Structure formats: C-alpha cells, structure tokens
Amino acid sequence: MVFSYYHRLSKRQQQVYQRSDAISVIVLPEGAGLQSVTAALAQALELEDRAAAESTCQRIADGIAERLNVTSLRIKVLARRPKLQGGELHGIYERTDTAKATIKLWMRTVERRQVVAFRTFFRTLIHELCHHLDYEWLKLTDSLHTEGFYKRESSLVRQLAGAHEALAQKTKC
Image (cartoon, rainbow, N blue to C red; front, side, top):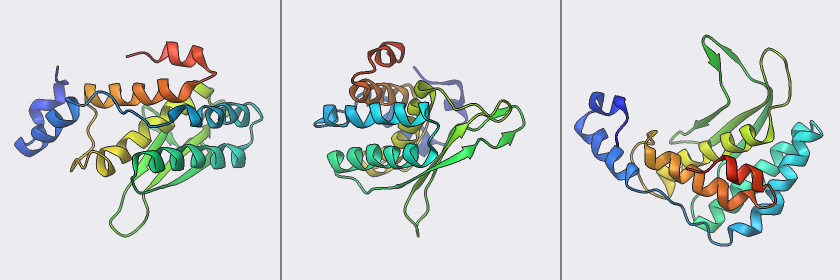
C-alpha cells in the first residue's frame, strides 16, 4: 500500500519510499534490557521532572544506537510545545552534515500546559528515533512516512514497552 503523496514524489524518492515500505520490523538485540529505562521515563513524566525525562530519553536513544551499531544522537526535552497554526509539534528530528543529529521533544502541551501522557511522549521519541535509524541503520537517502516506517516504529515500541503492557497492546500495528 502506498500513501497518497507517493505519486507526487520524484522517481528517486519513490524508490526510497518502496525500500522503506518493504522493511516492517527492527529487531533490537537485547531490547528487554531497555525496558527498565522505559519504565523510568514513565516515572520522570509522572513526577514532571524535565531533566530526568531528558536523561532517560538519552539513555534509551544511546541504548538503541549501541545495540544497532549506529551513531548516537542528542536528545533535548524542552518545556512546552511551540504553538503552530493547525496543531502542535510533538517532536522533531534535526540532521545536519556538521553536527550530531538531535531530537527535540516537548514535555507539556501548548494550551493547557499539562505534561504529555507517557504513551504519546514515548511514541514520539521512538518515531523520531526511527527517522535517525532510516538514515544511519537502513542507509536511506530520505526518511519518509511509509507504512513500513510506522510498522518499524511499532515494532520498537513493543520491544521497549516491557512492564507497560497496556502501551504495547495499544500500539499494535
């Protein structure tokens, strides 16, 4: 299945799309070893501790990078999401040729300034990490939202959910 924007892509991008779409799982060696870190992230969010959430997200990202033998990246957890027309930005992956790739995540919603629910925050972290893995692990020239991309994201969420079985069940492909 291809998403509607596929037909607007260049031939080169369509090839990248097809390659991305064909890969539906990321097998994370010893992924269970990161389940306790995932639980610590849930606790940091519950305590509304931005610094703890950031360091825990960094540990998750470092653990995934190490297990898949890819370059590490920097995680920043910022206080409140920026206001955008038509929605809110949950996270962003930034990649340059000169600096270490960075993921920015926001801990609080724009309007109500509430701490983002664990499931949403964690899923956003993994989503942005999947963009990094598209470039560094799969060696794709672009990171596109394909059905395969979302399946890879879900496969990582399930492997890392651990004690959060309800999260794993809610995020099935």
